[in-house]
Image (cartoon, rainbow, N blue to C red; front, side, top):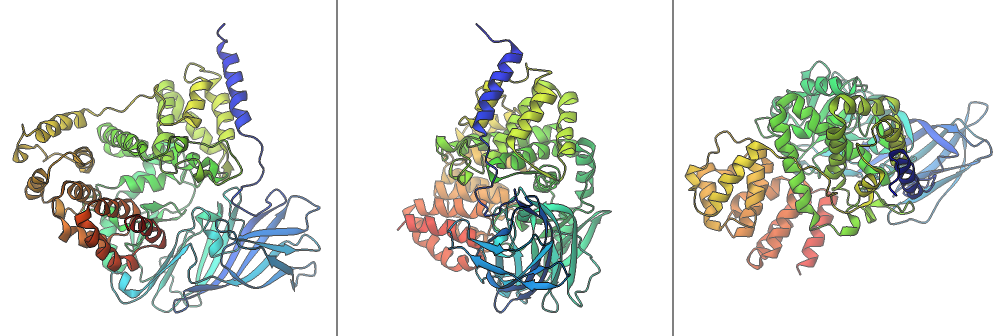
Amino acid sequence: MPLKPALRLLTGALLIQTAFAAHAQDPLSYARYDQVRTSDLRLDLKADFARKTLSGYAELTLNWLDKSARNLALDTRDLKIARVQVLNAAGRWAAASYMLDKPDAEKGRALRIALSSQPEKVRIYYSTAPGASALQWLTPQQTLSGKRPFMFSQSQSINARSWAPVQDTPAVRFTYSARVAAPSGLRVVMSAENDPQATGVGGWNFRMPQPVPAYLLAIAIGEIDVRSVGPRSSVYAEPARIDAAAYELADTEKMIAAAESLYGQYRWGRYDMLVLPPSFPIGGMENPRLTFLTPTMIAGDRSLNDLIAHELAHSWSGNLVTNASWKHWWLNEGFTTYVTSRIVESLYGADVAQMNLQLEQEELFASLKDIPVAKQALLTRDADVNPATYTDEGLAYPKGAWLLHTLEQRAGREVFDPFLRGWFDQHAFQSATTEQFLAYLRKNLLEKRPDIMGENELAEWLYGPGVPATAQRAVSPRLAALDAQRDAWLKGETATKDLSTKAWNATEWMHFLNDIDGKASAVQLKELDEAFALRASRNNEIAFRFYLASVKAGYDVREPLNAFLMSVGRQKFVVPLYGALLKNEKDQAWAKGVYAKARPRYHPETQSSVDKLMKKSV
């Protein structure tokens, strides 16, 4: 006998809640934040480029939740601890006893501080290791000018502990301030209030008044110039890149306004951006007040600005409302991918947004062949291990977004938009779990409209492989027309010179190149190259796809590909290209030779990924 809708909802809810067995602690952190939480962090550091270290102290202000607790556990990785002090009842700093656990390959070492009371503040004097996992120290040769060194951080997901002793879990949020001393002539910037007029005399000073988790701590030091691109936005970049960066990011204020119209006030004061050297391994990092960006998004025509929209969207989904542990990663990235599409639609129109969404979904399905079925869920039921062991981090972006698009399609925007805005408003500056979102979803949407999605389907989205059969795929009329041309061209029915590409934007070119990858012949790719100069494209997304298809087809692009691999360090591009080259016996030796020269230019994460490919090909 079929259950009534309300009873079906309750029964399914109990099933899903059972999967969220109570587990108070983040398994990737040693911190006992059920006992004590950091409320503020003060950093006083000196950058030493010769030794590749940051040294100084971290001062933590503590909020004691358990009145019987007398121990403080902090996360560290490869930190050299000099001494620990506590602020005693008399207002003086006094030595405190501490010990470091044996190192764990994944989590680092717990710094355990034994206390006789519950001090308001603790101060740890330390220095980082030259190989700190969060910090990349670039030689002058790895920068545009070739004159001065550069350093930048990447703290996500649990690498903040390699440059500051903190409670390194997204469950803990704190305000912070910093003073950083650096060599003369180099500017320091952080994910905090940056003063464009600062000179660094007496140190560079920063303040972050909004509470953030440790993974959003960010720092960069180097030859850095600054340009204003709007009333509340500036771009920072190496001097030789600043003009191009300022041009590319000129639409930033429009994006902020578009996001605010959908999801409420931008609550971080300013939205500044830093374009990093080419070795930055990812597209962008949403560090609040100072998004870090890859230079590969600079195409000269603002055609890759959806990356900016994505990092800006994190100002609501991820930074404002943060996943409480990395198990709930989809709450950050799935939500942000959905919000990105709405910002793009608001600025550039529904047809552009629909093309981007179709491309996103197509690439999702293409990725499934390389993801084990057991890792295709948004969420793991196992709370006691690193969720990356059981879920694919990259899949969370499009699959999580697709779930939200499905809810929006069925509820209607007049219902769904206030619903999502309410989620951000009610959980602002908090860390949330999937269980909390489901409770909010049921109370504010599904209990009123159980026809939108049943609990079994919801569980399939969260725990099932791939994408539920009930999902509605995006269909772009513009891409459908392109597909007809592509098919005729692949069959030889349409000559390359007759392809109607004049009105194609970057998304259309990416879609076309994705679809001919592994299908077009070397002759066809040569004709494309001669007709449209694809090997010389300034759009790195287009160039990457063209090179990848060419390598697989056997079309010789070694000259431009060598320059690309020597100048681009983004893993999204570098790893697949080396992978394709190593699969062709005639290209293996060449690829290894290029990598031997390019490897010092890459980020350690990129080096590790390509090193694994090289070992497999031996």
